Length: 71
Image (tube, rainbow, N blue to C red; front, side):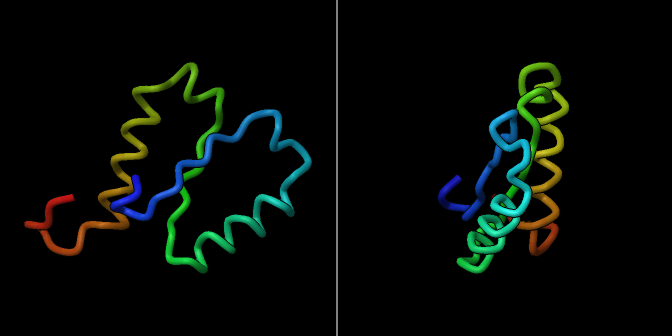
């Protein structure tokens, strides 16, 4: 989602016990003007429809500037 400046972070077992690193990385990305949408790999594998709705809601919340704006 380069045009939006959006990072989609899928967290799985590799993120266990990496909270400090993940927070620092996210703060760095946000300092560059990027937004981070985090979701678990479990939800991606098992609840993809919900993930897509949440992603859509995230995009609308953070990128809609006027009711007539198009993404």
